[in-house]
Amino acid sequence: MIISAKIEKNSIIPMYRQIFICAEAHSPFRRLQYSQDFAKKVFFAIFARQISFLLTFYSIKGK
Image (cartoon, rainbow, N blue to C red; front, side, top):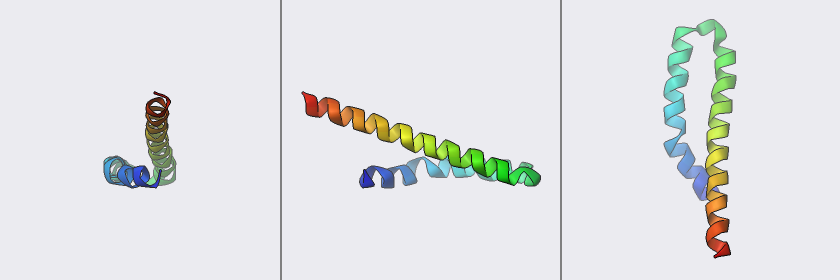
């Protein structure tokens, strides 16, 4: 789990950080709302990646 979390930081977060910077530049007054959306997107991306990792792990272990 820890190793996959480190991979997530390297692969997913820079992409979302780029989107976040663009959104923040276009609308400084809605910064809080964008940061909440940003956090949700990152969380769900990592969460989905972890679940797919666990499912493949258990299916391999089952065989």
